[in-house]
Length: 126
Image (cartoon, rainbow, N blue to C red; front, side):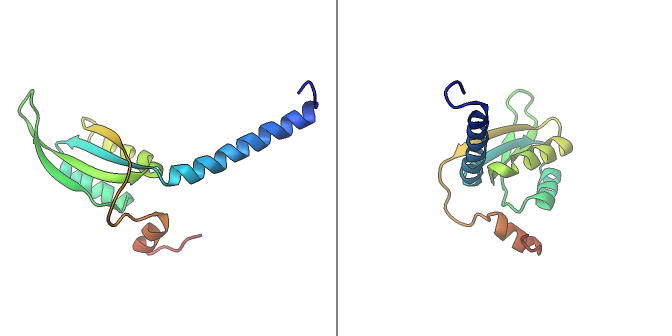
């Protein structure tokens, strides 16, 4: 700023911001998370997740160690962009649930990206 003036400093800030947004969008698209959802309302959570996300859910029977209450652990792999939707659905259906998020390094098998999810829903990409 002192050497090149305010105008050049402003352009530098704008370009750094734009570049960070592009890199974040590219990088975030490929980040995957595995969510482990501990709940006593597994069927309701799965039904609501099915309405918002097209993801497979694995059900693992569970029992709480403290109260010995039966429940389930739901495992689902999502993209970073789907995290808000997942958290919103789970907390709406079962506010007492527990969600553990784990960074996923690699996945094998069918994992729908945004385009494939639109096709599965019968929508067209814009």
